[in-house]
Length: 385
Ligand code: AOF
Ligand code: ZN
Figure 1 (cartoon, protein in one colour):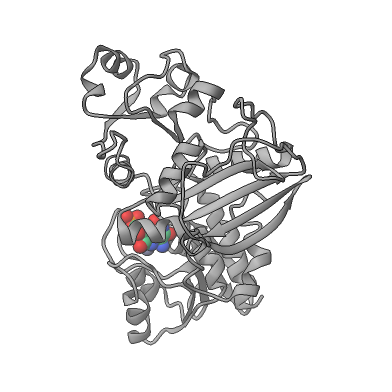
Figure 2 (cartoon, rainbow, N blue to C red):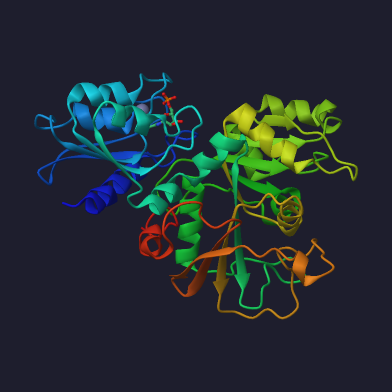
């Protein structure tokens, strides 16, 4: 097995941590002896042993002289668990192949350096872009303290998310809905504005795929939503974070909601009386360790996020249907000239059943090679495994 094939396997193993390890990274590790796999490990849960330690512990043969292939640079810091580098050195591993450098400032580069200083051969950057892809949320969060924000839009071929009267169910097909549920299972939180709850009364749960339930974040500045909305009453109501203004949180309604198990988050308002979005995202990170958020609508929220340049990634599911006059996902965002338009990086164009699935990124991936990654990325967290 080559380094690349082993890294491929390590990526698959890393994906087993989906939904369980955040805000920590997904990490997978394979140990090779004369090209054969003699150990496998992955980071299985937040606070659990790191992938490298699991692979060493479960190796079926003596690892002295073997090669370790790991998606992320091994750590040197004392965190929830002891550092991995000393453990690797003790084991007698002779060579370490690393997917990407750890963006965590406490580690970055130092793991590689310590291994090399101890005489271990180190190769860095194998399937680097894929490794970044599975940890893009982690990379942003650990370096900025802000969650990685992903938008999801289901639209018609002519760019509408609803008819003028608000009707929007259903635009896209079964496979696209499955992919949206896969995104929910992968990200830490889903977020919607008040109007979306009013109009659709959504559950925002993970049903079409196996996976854990993310936080549900609802923005309702003045607490106008009906108490009977599903997000406040269903079995996951303790996973609902209701964001409102300081004034609204002084009311009896707020008290009733709080006592039914809902999390209330006080967010300062801006000069227009709307919740200040950059602060809101920062609070979600600080209070709830939320490192990634899936925006599910509607137009007010999408437009506001774009205005604040908060969108890191957008998934657009396009169904082959024409609406004519209709609602537009960013209709509350106005620019004066084309040069002010948002022009994200085109990351992937995929088929999703009878729909199209387009993924764009605010910035091109900071690491790795373009073409090598495309085919693999389809199976790494776009719900397309
Ligand atoms: C993981 N899993 O397999 C590897 C990680 O708080 P700790 O001790 O779990 O440390 C988390 C940091 O360790 C994380 O930010 C990353 O820099 C490094 N590597 N983390 O959760 C792993 N290898
Ligand atoms: Zn570690």
